[in-house]
Image (cartoon, rainbow, N blue to C red; front, side, top):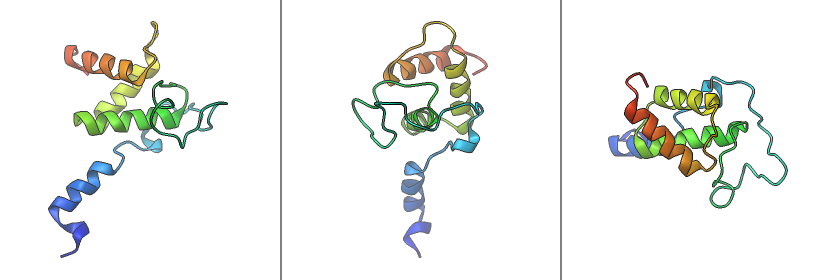
Length: 112
């Protein structure tokens, strides 16, 4: 039996695969180029501390990281994308603040 087809390996492989892809995103006006001083290939502090809602690669990475940490479905992630893009009040700035806000929203909303 191949290692890639065994049950434990499938689970491990799925853990590292992205649930949401660029094609899944509902908002099509994202920038896919890094702004000056930002590098889409850099992960971790300080680049990942803030979430820029207009940069597709940042939103995509953020949604997939939440899905992995909290067991969210693709539908949950796309709802979160809508909430991130439609937030009209002073939006959270850091990824941690966005995550905390989304988790609270999901917990109190009947129709997530």
